[in-house]
Image (tube, rainbow, N blue to C red; front, side):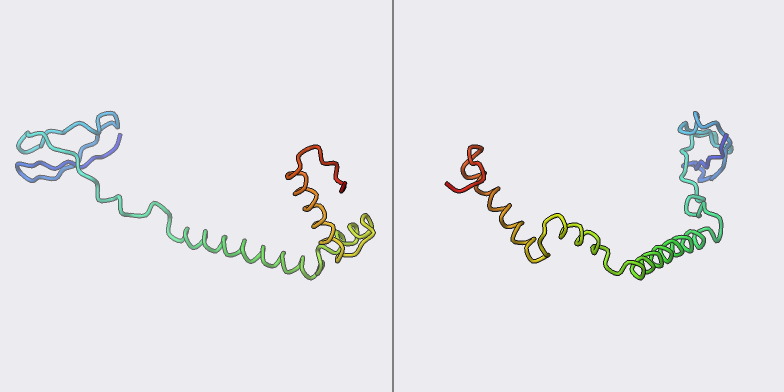
Length: 128
């Protein structure tokens, strides 16, 4: 059961009644004149439902997470200044070529795809 506020049009009386939620939309009789009164929007709705200081705790927690994340990223950068070094070394071993040749290789692959699109599936990947 909840408290609801009602207002009478005729005598301008504002009053509260305790009713079950299922009857909350029904009009209530005015205690002074007996006329049906409409339910009003309660004034408590503009107050915060969060306990005092909770917003500061949430904000502080978010700032702490952000700080920890930045610190971890700085630590990672110090420990591993070039994260792609291992990848470059593996690529160089597998291709037997340095980084300059990789763009050339990529351009060759792109040219092969273009020719395949132009000539269809019958193109075998070599010039005739």
